[in-house]
Image (cartoon, rainbow, N blue to C red; front, side, top):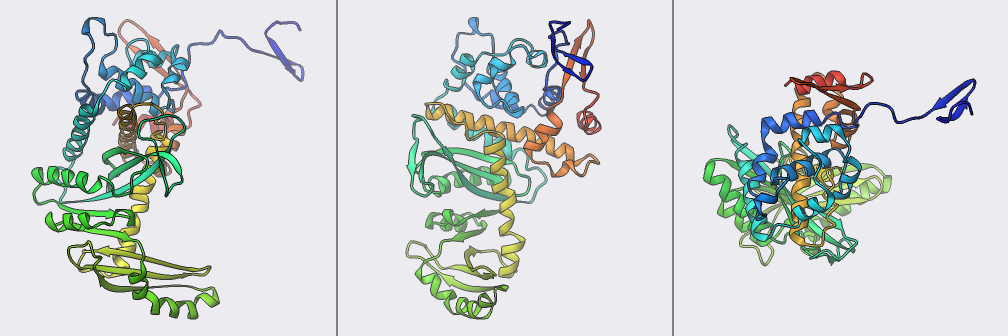
Length: 432
């Protein structure tokens, strides 16, 4: 070989590899994240609620520095504290964080340094932050849903859940059904039923909202796992509107039996699609009063599908309540939980301590809230395709861009790749 750096030949040209290029980062969007944080101060405000009992004489990284590093790493796809070792020479991270990155042991100590009182304060701060964004609104929709986080170690409160058939932790989310904001994320023991704690937490949220906005119209939307007697009492006591699914039982089956037989004979045998709604009242033994119930009886062409739900929304038909309101929770809540869980890595709760994993859930939720700000900025641009992006697409197409940095006496230049496909979109967003 004529040159020691030649790795192979392509026709009559030798291919050479060396390490003499500029210091290039794959995360050129860090400057965008820094500008968003400077404007909205999301991380700065929440870091105030993280107690710091360390000796201040020996501190290199403040709580804000540690939280910012962890959230920015999460947003750019580095889900584990161990990923710091891959970024220790990254010039952009060093510039944005104003120094070397905190090491993996430092980040791990940070996550493990909080107790239940700290978690409680952080929860209150999270709800207060949401309430501060409600100015000018007359109504809100609160979506409540839960998801599983399978565990593979010895995490505290990792317990077997019979419904999911695995050892896990249970994550509970309260979402704003119109904006996608997380009203509150909660980490529960793995064997928790869907409605464990949620009525008590929802009550606290309602009281906090009504204290600031006493005339706010609040509508609750949940699936059948959250239907329970304390919930129906709560909505009456605080004059809430709601629509919730309800699990079928022998009494409810009798209500739809005649209609189900009719649809089976008329449509199912022909493999035709058809649906009808039926309205009835029902009161379980534990409920304090009768509730207005509905059922959707449907032939899908392949089989029967019967769904029961309860609602106190007046002036709308069962069809309107179901299709114009209830089913929208699929995108407003379930898809948003997928983004937090799978794209902001809330399923990586691998610390041993329960409180440390609760903090990790908060960090993932903060990353989600930062992405939500980016989504809002994208909506103000003329890029229609980008307006449909989920978090994973935003990370891949917008945040992952090669860049170099040039530091002079009076200026710092971020040189992003000329080949960046969405450079016009990036420019529009960063200049907002």
